[in-house]
Amino acid sequence: MSEPALELARDVELLRRIAGGDRAAFSDFYDQYSGLLFSIAVKVLNDAKEAEDVLQEVFMQIWNKADAYNPLLGKPVSWAVTLTRNKAIDRIRSHQRRSKLLEQATLEAAAPPDDSLSANEKLHGKENAERIRSAVADLPAEQRRAIELAFFNGLTQDEIATKLQQPLGTIKARIRRGMLKLRERLEGFL
Amino acid sequence: MIDERMEEQAALYVLGALTPEETGAFESALGRDVELQQFVTALRSSRDALAGSLPALAPPPALKQKILDQIAAQARPTPAPASLAAGSVRWFNWLPWALAACLAGLCAISVFEQKNLRQTIGEQAQQLIDLNQLANGLRNQAQNLQTAVATLRETNRLANLRIAMLNSMLADSPKAVAVSLWDDQQQRGVFLVQNLKPLAADRDYQLWVMDPKYPSPVSAGVFQVDAQGNVRLQFKADKPIDTANKFAVTEEPKGGLPTPTLKNLVLLGG
Image 1: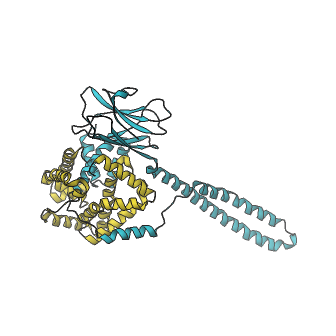
Image 2: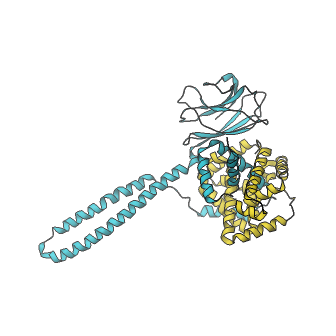
Image 3: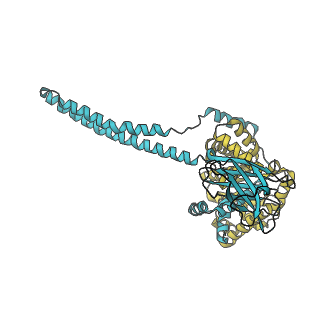
């Protein structure tokens, strides 16, 4: 299914059934989103075993707190993505010092781009995944870098500014422009 | 209208890059501003798409069963009924008085046992103090329990949610579809439309909520779709809704009408 309206209805209904204790609904939600959430956790933690632990915590929270999801504030998958990212970042912060985060961010910056299949292919189909890939690829490198340092590396605005040796205002503007550009390119289709 | 600074804050918010203080301030503004909520929802979807462009990795197959086993082993937390908490409060309200009555009874015992009685009274008085403290503690626990139950009810949003699928009534737009999520408690909803033809500038689509308590549909505002025929919006009905039975969209003159033009019915469902 790649129709956003139908996806939203399906996912909200799944969460409602999960809140009512329906394990089949939980299993469906897991099958649909575990790949995306696991990919995010691995990206943040750079450690598959730790990412497994995070994924387990996230899905237990989804099971126990499904009725805390507020449909007026976003899609179910956005809720799950936020949970996963925040738990992974918390885990890094509890294990490592901030300097380690910065060090890891530097290592990742040197890593070559990966051309393998994306999680979007499963979620949105090949054609739509290509559209997303193109929208992401079209982001100016400095905007994408600032966005990724914030989301995947958990750096604050100040830390990003320090790391990229740019004024704080420049970093804020890059992140805003990058996110607006993505929204514009993907509007009406996500 | 969302200004540039607020857009900046929203972008940083969805990426988790605000400080806790900034997050609190932003969420406070978010709770009051429907337009900002829609903006944040759109940014979150863009962020998810960015995350989805990562190389696909599958978690180990055994992990799913491990989680399902953990769920099976865990008793689902169920909210305690409010009446239980209230009952606890009532019971402990009279407990100290009952003990005081017992104490008074002891005072009537023979004067020949005055010495022993004094000792007994002293012990009972101490017990009364202890029990009063216990009762106070349990009363506080009961109040906390009541607060917890109220919080659970507040957060149980999905129980109040009505999901409706609206299908096209138009021969020339058979692929048009919409989903309405209506929250009874908050009296507002989210409406997501796809593949609806864009209208001329002097026309609007108008959303209606059908509640059996009203003789005619209740307007929930007007909207336009983008060039692809899509829109996502939050809406409120013009009147309080008890039961949102069905939802409909009609095409109306710019700004909408107080009652729907049925021959211009575009989408209908419930």
